[in-house]
Image (cartoon, rainbow, N blue to C red):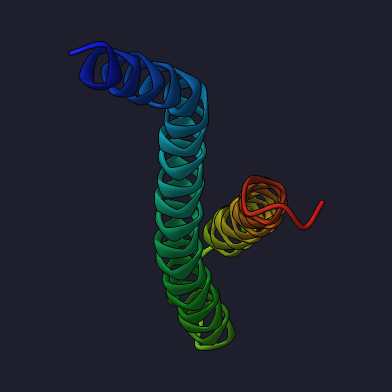
Length: 112
C-alpha cells in the first residue's frame, strides 16, 4: 500500500497547489461579472438621461412657442431652459460614468 499512499499524497498536493489558481480564477470571473453589470447599468442610465434631454428640449421648444404666442411668461421659458440644461448636465455625467465603468471592465478582463 505504500504506492497507493504515495499516489494519494501526490494527488493531495496537486489539488492543494491548484486551489490558489482556482480561487484567483473565481475572483477574476466575479470581478469581470461585476464590472460588466456596472457598465450595463450605466448604459441604461445614459439611455434614460438621453430620453430626459429630448423631453426637456421639447418642453423648452413648446414654452418658447407659448411665449411667442403671448400665452406664457418669460419666467416659464427660463424655467424650461434651466430644466433642459440640467437634463443635459445629467446626460453628460451619465456618459462619463459609462466611460469609467467601461474602463473598469477593460481592466477586469486584462486589457488595462
